[in-house]
Amino acid sequence: MLRIPGPMCGSILGDDWIDPGTMARSRMVSRVEQLDKSPTVAFAPQYLKPQERDLLTVLDDAGITNVTERAMFLAQVAHESKDFRKLRENMNYSAARLLAVFPKRFKSLKDAEEVVKQGFDAIAERIYGGRKDLGNVEKGDGARYIGRGYIHLTGRSNYMNAGQALGLDLVHHPELAENPNTAARIAVWFWQRDPRLGSRARARSVSGVTRIVNGGLNGLADRKRRFKQYLEILDTDNSDETAGSSSPLP
Picture 1 (cartoon, one colour):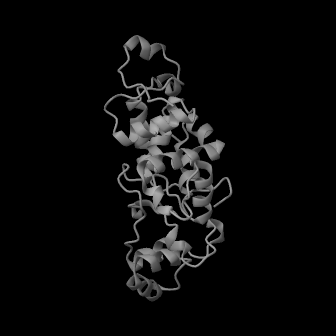
Picture 2 (cartoon, helix red, strand yellow):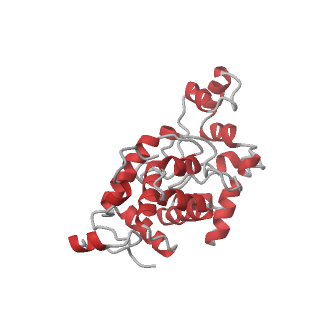
Picture 3 (cartoon, rainbow, N blue to C red):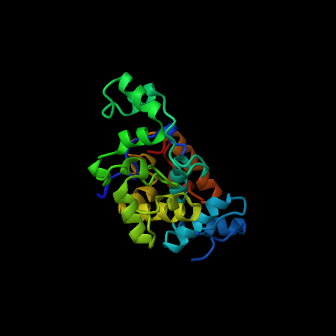
């Protein structure tokens, strides 16, 4: 998972995931400003959720001001974290679901049933333990470095790299990634470390961004829906971007 490209999480979790510059301007703009504004001018209406405003502030700190990119970022993060409510990966799998989602990690349904009986750590260790692509080389790393935060920070390597970049000891204190402020900073760090995310976001390629974030196209319809909503919430006049085209967002 050290490599770029590559998703933050170690697997496509989807519905099984149960898992702040300056403050973005919070005033409502006039219609004249709406028609005249540049697509790189960003502002946030007051009715955004606190977590969304915090994320926009971190984006400001990082110099990410393009409205379309910001809308894509929020859409991806909101989907991954179930509307910013779940910052820790859930391991409440049934044996059948484990076998279906992680067929290479379990020999049979009976094998999955035995692991489920052993509980959270055993399930996490079986899914992530020993995975060199995640930097999980020590016993217990699988359970210690489960997915946390808004964007599924998973694996020792990702915790180490994010911690070094942000000045946090995430290796010894991985639970810090569950703090909303830290989760926001990690999400923006992840976004910036792969320049394809910004370029694909500005090009409105929901599928292109999703493949990097998720490792596949899980939840694509919901991500598209959220992207359109955030474009409206951030008050972007994107009619010129879509005029003459009836094709869906890619």
